[in-house]
Amino acid sequence: MARAPNNKEIAALLGAIADALEIKAEDAFRARAFRSGARRVETAPVDVATTVLEGKLDSLPGIGTRMGNVIADYVKTGASPQLEEARAGIPAGVFELLMIQGVGTKTASRLFNELEIVDVDGLEAAAKSGRLRQLPGMGPKKVQRFQEEIARLHERRGTFRLGDALPEMARLLGGLEGATGVTAISPAGPVRRGAATVRGIDIVLAATDANAVAHALGTLAATTETTAELVRGETAGGIPVTLHLATPEDFAVTLLRQSGSAAHLARLESIASEQGIDFGAAGPLRRGAAAVRVATEAELYEVLGLQFVAAELREDRGEVEAARAGRLPRLVELGDLRGDLHAHTRWSDGAHTIAEMAAAARRLGHDYLVISDHSQSLTVAQGLTPERLREQRLEVEAVDAEFADLRLFQGTETDILTRGGLDFEDAELAELDWVTASVHTAFQQSREAMTARMLTAIRNPWADSIGHPTGRLLNAREGYELDTDAVFAAAAETGTAMEINAMPDRLDLSDELARRAVEMGVDIVINTDAHAAEQLGLLPYGVVTARRAGITHEQVVNTRDVEALREWRRARMAKAGL
DNA sequence: GCCGTTTTCGGCCCGACTGTTTTCAGTCG
Image (cartoon, rainbow, N blue to C red; front, top):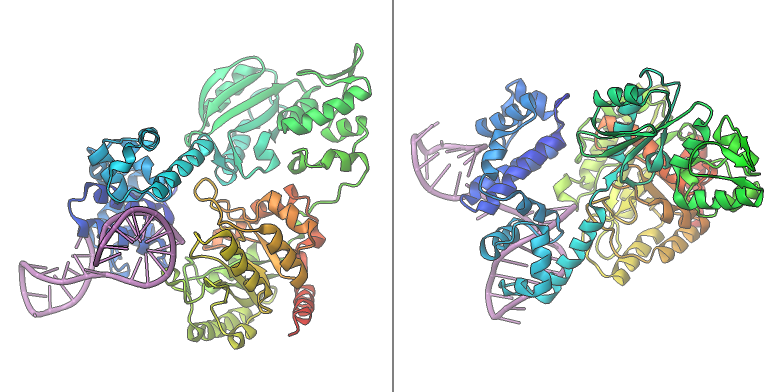
């Protein structure tokens, strides 16, 4: 590991050891110690790697000498002999079973020990054959749920989150741009379009020498194939990489072709053919025998009689028609955002202090930052009681006074309770500058119950916005069942904003739901939900999602400056009768 | 494995929810 693992990664290690120990079921208390250690590390108010290396274990309750050594080994070498030891004797596929929602270590252990199931495929077969029902406690609903979950697992096999692919893309671009003979380089494919999950990384290069490019890629990733037109490889994290080579003359058209999507390109092709232009599979566009040369993608769209279509829009969701009619809007850009309305601190489950978060927001050039820690019902995140909320206000005000050019506001990310109530009294909410309301519990409620719960929250006059409205975790958990149209209709009526949560493991609202929301007249907020200072820098993921939804800066509440933001809120409250 | 001692062992233990039960086991945030 090039850099020291962060708390989340260390927590994942301790959790993985706990998994292995629980599956072995030899010493439940030892397993529990690792489990609680993982939890403590995840919510530790300090950088655990540093703390352990400095020998300051005393400041980490639940982490003793032995677990300290586990962490130290991992931090120093990037590997964990203790994890290997704990896993010894259990097939790797058994741990894959834990990725299925509803399968914990107890079930995985029984599947392995009693049914000799060693991987997801084995579980699928046992579910299908009915053999699974032999296990006591394994009723029809569980079997059906497992089958649904396995189907989802198959779907996302080979897909990677944008949050994992984009940093790799940036690293590759940096390493390739100086390679011999490379005169132009650009991101392409679904990563360029900002898709929430992708199957690979595509890059287009104007380059003369495929072998030189392959050599350069070899220093950055494992190269697997080289031809005159492309070089393939795979990153250390297993993400397939394709480098598409073009001549300098054909760079723009190759970039367009390799940026996709297939559906968007098919629409362009048919427009081109109306004009007697052959799109072709490679090389320049042709009109009859003559090559149609274009220097940029913008020129290419112009030749076709279209406005330039931003890469994020190229999904054939009406953008071609809009481009033809000259109706494409100017999409929201990162530079339009003036602040972040959703961030956590050590007061609940964040890693940094209010002052550290404020300093990071200032470095990003934000005009304002809302401190929005969890509310008391979320005990696992050390949510704030009304008393602690009042105490926190003093600290927010004190830190705010230290920053001349950043306004610090106190908000909350209040839980939406199971019946839709918020986790603070009206009088307490009235003291806050911004209220985000989010669902964190009882995800399994029926569609009707969840929709009613959400509508109640939206109609609460104190709720300014709904955080991560569907609760999805990319490649990990489906969102809860929800009638999103009913939710958006209510939000449009009350003026409650819907969040595009920029956390790369959420991107919630999705691009498609965000598009639907603005069509229905809902205002959008783009927030990071940062739990650490560096995560305040994740706003671009939210912006790209908003752009895919065709959203403009007017539709995003936090493109407003402090005064206009206050005005937006006053207007919303007035409408709510406050 | 951690902790706190009645100081080197013995106790440790989230709560809501679901599905399968008929009083509870397992999962999960």
